[in-house]
Length: 458
Figure 1 (cartoon, rainbow, N blue to C red):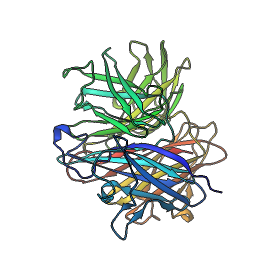
Figure 2: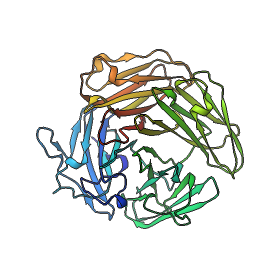
Figure 3: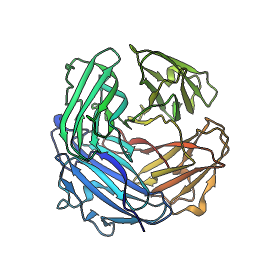
Figure 4: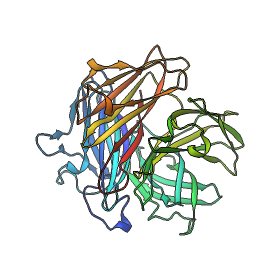
């Protein structure tokens, strides 16, 4: 007998083709969202989608795309390994009015979800992240910004508990300034969003400059959170999830130093009290870097062009010398194109990694997957795409900590215009972690036409 269980929860800023005044906009003049669901089981899954408005009202559209022949019923089915993308503005307005929603996805077999959001208008903003399977009463955001070289955080928190939540976000700046955001009685499964370019935290002024981290407190209720950090004047957007805890060893599958114009900054945050020395080692043999973190200076930022000698793409391992819990975010920019994206460092991996959304020139979008061997033994990686299992192949062998980039846009067996899911499998019991980058060259208007996200470790 099948058991209908809640598999994935995630926050989506889903403003459906509604123009707003730029001063009040969350990202661009108009914000839209999509999400992609991938079936990672060996059976056909039935998937149901519920939208929850900020006041707690539930909406269950009968159609997730009302236009034939692409109409998607709700619920819908997914064969093993397959994925389905839902573009929220395509949902009939009679089923889902314009607004901002959190989303709950449920299925009778295991699925994962990746969310994408975009701001449109005079500039383009693009961000993406992987969904949550559950929350905790406290969540940590390793990097936040307020008026920092034009960057501002946009923090979304979803109440994933059974009752209302009193949510408080404490912003801790490296210069000692503290700010707070709060919202009482957030309904179960609903979300609240603060765009700091519009919402000034208590304790800040218009002249405050904050580079720091944040702690999200659900008031005893489980929550999840996402930071859509962006630069309103250019459209650059870095999106990443909060975490319930850190680890004393973290893995970063991809960093760049002048790699096809990309450069990365690695932000590392300690969670505990007391000092720790953090060592960052790289798989390309570049000399290690270190950060001495204290309670007065609990984070550091390593901009790769200033700290890394060799040009190229590489991975990293981050380790505390005294088992201090750490969080880290890798933000990357391609200044020539105005592109920006971010992924989170991870504490480990799995033998099988699900990649919900990759493309080969799908409406101009192209993808690359970066995978790092985070286990204790060398391994090859088997790469398989939904619908093309017969063309699966193995990468070259990777030693512990080493990484490889899989360029989806160069896969000769995939047809031009393809979009779907992928599965990465390590061999012989090894473990792997992956990140994904999606970009579209030549998109209009100008701004950020790239997004990055962490693939899902099963």
